[in-house]
Image 1 (cartoon, one colour):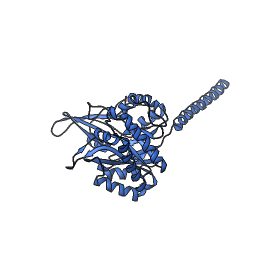
Image 2 (cartoon, helix red, strand yellow):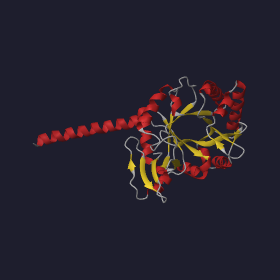
Image 3 (cartoon, helix red, strand yellow):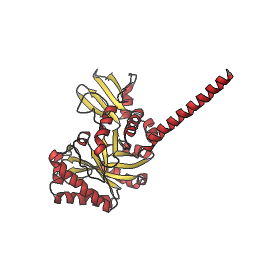
Image 4 (cartoon, helix red, strand yellow):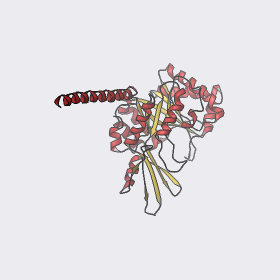
Length: 338
């Protein structure tokens, strides 16, 4: 009996060692795919967004969002962005690579903003002359303002402009490289599987969000099946891609949809039952407001984001980007970079 017990003990020890080896191997596999982490700081919420970005350790880069266009197709900065940019370059952010994000949103003389205006892209890529004119302006900005690189976030691009836009990306990348500057290109999920001949060299950022949102009924910004499809569709993209996950969530009520931050969602939970969705890791709950209106909220917390990030890394070696800082909980701020 003692002999059998001794043998059993040895077997158990060997099994434990085997388990440890397996766990270490799994950890190493994930670690081997450990990615760089970047985040966006936005102009319309720049004080909170900036402060939170400063609290996030181990960021490889920060994207300052953003550079827009005016009604004459010229580059345009909001006053908030000017304040953000000033602080970013004067403060500790200069220790991290700073990118300038260019967005095809148009600001009209009356202050109204037209989001994702495809006409802007059409104007930029119309001819080689127009492409090179905008490229030179962006290169000059990157050099004069000391950005590490330029990020282009052009959305709702017309199919007829897609080829010329690739030429724009190709030439912009070459010009930036001449001055040791980088180029990041943001891609909408719907465009990834459509395009095949991506320009080699730039860093491509996949928007792994908007699964549910302003265009739909209630649900998470991403789920695991959605992430898996994006990883599969991105196999033909050259280089190591960056996958962007979104913080916060949405509030659906009486036909109205409102974007909310994580902290705003937490503030509304009260005593309401909060459930974690198994297919996405996102949190959701319902409640009635003071006017007896029904609300359904879905949002991401620290556990949600970490689950999405780990799922993407296990599928493919990717970098991770966080859209966006501003309105994060203390727990998310403290642990998201670990």
